[in-house]
Image (cartoon, rainbow, N blue to C red; front, side, top):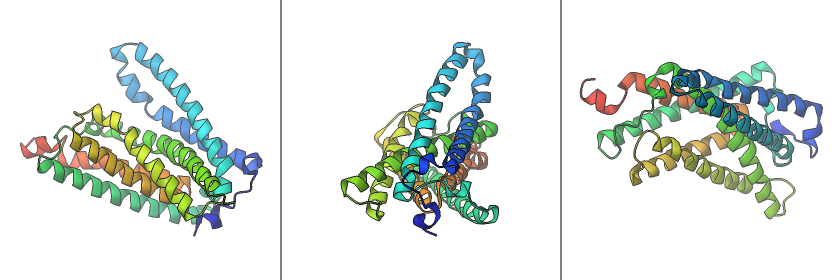
Length: 267
């Protein structure tokens, strides 16, 4: 089922009542993503009350960005064949799409986890790649929920949609062709990869190998999630992203231990 078949966006789709319902649903998801990490922040509140205050400011800024991205996705998405069709789909039809997204996410997460493990075993990557969240399952789950929702709404629903619309305008096309979609997808995916460098720097030294791996694997993930967004809608991209993160943040660390170094030493 192609994007044109399921999205049917009108040029003034953002003013349609159904669009406001979709906007409310997306903002509800985004608020859930922001609140998901609150227990982690609260657990660190012993480091000072200023941490909670800073979280409140960051959350407000993030909420405004989420609202902007959601509005852009709904306003421009209908013009370029992108959107959130599953928010209006029948449950039985949505279930099949989301199940396939789960399988894609789990598969890519497993591929990435095994690849990282192999690179560490070959001493091409440091052994301290697992973050605090990855060493604590409940934190890993909350981080996975938060990242999947926030990053897909911001990077795919907002940024990728805007880029596709711009590329379509540059080619003077009334609607976006595959070329414009792929161009927007790849650019958004590269920015998605670059956005993960600060997270990598928080757990290990940014060597050339670490930077390359972070960029490549996250960019590949971004392209996959972008393709799902294009062909199945934003909810499919969110579900696939969450499934991949559950493997990387929770399941794989539980299987191999806190880090490859610990496993190799019998820890």
